[in-house]
Length: 296
Image 1 (cartoon, rainbow, N blue to C red):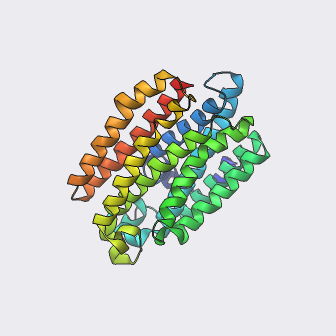
Image 2: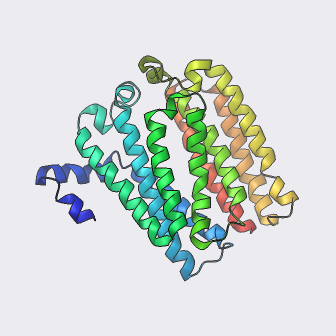
């Protein structure tokens, strides 16, 4: 599929395309994180037992999720160029380093490749991949401008990766709490990112929650969500779903890190501050998944 796609480019455009993939809009760090999330989703569904089945479906689901996630980032950048000229002017599209035409081709490649790889894992994974791909498009096209709706959409889709992984091995028993944990922490992160983007969003008419209702109220909602998440992390242990190893990691690392993020939020004043909090929340999500794996 890649070589067929590559023929659509002239030599110069193809070199530009490859540079684009590796260094800029493809966001290799996000790609790797999404791949790992997909792989871990399968590992969790298999009860933390590493086997040939886990490896096979983990690679398929991880690759599919990473490609679809990258496609979502690309279409968002394509449709968000006006805002990014203010919020992120160094990105390849608003800076003029990359053409919209090339970006669109890469988006199509990621979308089709992601769904195709998911179809190898099974019909249900393919359906989930297709729905996710279209949902990411509609998020970028319109949903992100509806206060909280866009945030809820991305949080749901991020949590859905654990259902995605479970569908590949037809075992959903261990997917529920990782889904809830991922949903809550990514909902928090999405609102933080919206606060970070207020300068550009406000000038270009994107009506996110912080733009419409203000940063102070947004911070209050984040505070409530973080406190709710901290309380929720103890429930699986109380219900004897996870073992003591889970509680130890949650108590000594995940929840203290959430408290520190909340403290940083109260002092945050500029885009750099909010960007740092967003990155920390991404790391905390992996700490939480690690705690779940050890607690199975």
